[in-house]
Image (tube, rainbow, N blue to C red; front, side):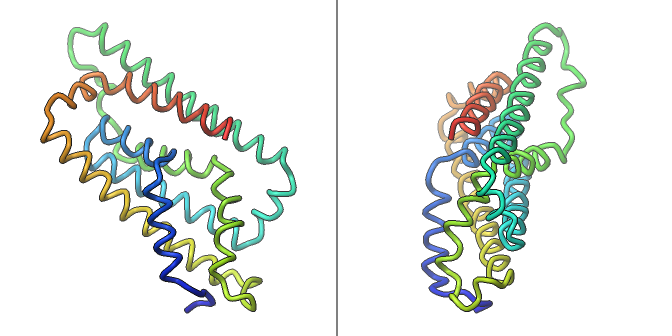
Length: 209
């Protein structure tokens, strides 16, 4: 199908990879804490869109070029580190203003597109995803089709879809746990501080991984 092989094994491997805690999982959970389920869904859509960007990079052969230039990987990783660091500082600033204000601040009104954009940029600025695809996807492509971009686009789109499905399961579990254990809502009371810590941790993760 579209130049792929053992597609069922690919789907199984994809779900197992999604279920392994990582940068995307932490990012989505942090967004759920900050703005609820719909914010988490927007962030998940951004991450899945980022996967499609990486798929295009692999399909067009740019990832193989990237693998030969460690300096380019370092630059992208540092860009991801700076972006996540900026988000962490921004959340800390909002938290501080909120503590100092006697009334709700207008800065609490969040742009609906923001979680999507943050998820997209965070994923795209992690070059390890493209390099992982270079190693992972060819195993599920028929040898005679490995020079064609079609199977890579198909597998990458499938990976993005399974990523979003897993994210929906994760968001639903997060919502259920929050409802069942009200004490967990303490995180939402300090959501900006929690999110800043998560962003800072992810920044270090992207830089050192």
